[in-house]
Length: 117
Image 1: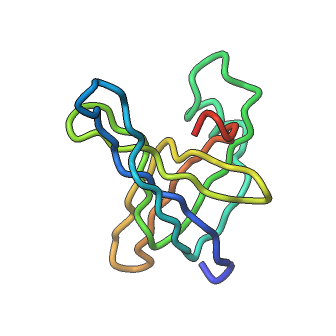
Image 2 (image 1 turned 90 degrees about the vertical axis):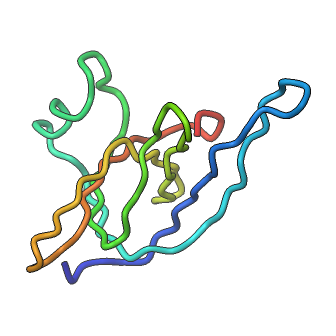
């Protein structure tokens, strides 16, 4: 994994409803990670995305940093967002490969519009 570069991740806390019942978005923090970002193959695309979603740009990410997909429920977790090539990619899944040899995380992310993230 010697081909890693620095990338920015944006992580937003869950948010909450105020006393008037209006949703207040959580705080966003940005931090750098070392990662290898690569396009995904057609086979990976078919495994990761539901049928019918075929026009979304997607990447896979290899890193030592655990990245978080969206999580429903209590507490809710907003998906981390990768800034890559002037675009935003929402983390949709992240798997730990912690064998003790070359431990890392492999995540998949899909491109999102600024208003979607």
